[in-house]
Image 1 (cartoon, rainbow, N blue to C red):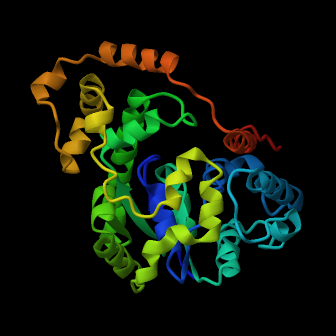
Image 2 (image 1 turned 120 degrees about the vertical axis):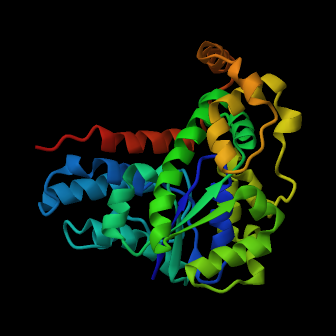
Length: 327
């Protein structure tokens, strides 16, 4: 059984590629529950995990997290089953097995895992799972920022989005450079994935050591994918299949000033990743830090931020990990 991790910014096709991989007969791509992120960042807070009391407290917090009405898995995530997934203190076995149980529930051997900002805890992943392989997916930051701006479940607009995209790419590129030295990472753009899906999927699967299957392009017909797509407006596109024209939307849906701000923030990373600018460097240099922050304040006051109940519950459950104190 193999675990494959995705390196990708939010609103950049992360759910799309996860469900695309889920269309393979031997790969499960579970909808995100944000399991690894809070555990990896806060495992130290639980003290000695060989202490059964501490271990049970960690599992109870994980149970609370996976039980909220955020996304749906097929496997049984009851507290009793979670406690039986691994020996006391064996974090590696627990994380592997919670995902592999979902694989078994679907009759699949491999799992494709989306977790946000995994560059923040890559040493944790590499130490526990040195054999892991990673897919690095990037999307044009102008389309990513447009999608972010239109999503009420995420705070802020194009400024927040562009800053996050820049931070993400700087960190993903740094880690990608290291991982690819051992052939543990593969790069793909969202634009190529939607325009040439068969070619790009074959390249990804070849990297993962698996064979292409035609029915992967029908991933959206999966009942569980349909159910999850209905739980969050940001996931609605998952029920529509490959959207080949879902690029360069920013040309019509963002104004010139918004595009200029995004390019000002992201220009160096865009240049490296071969996303061509709409504005000259001279024009971008006219924008100041104060200009960007003023526009950011306008966006924060103007744009709605109203996450659905499932997202609120997931955020509250994750918060527990960051506030844990065990002596």
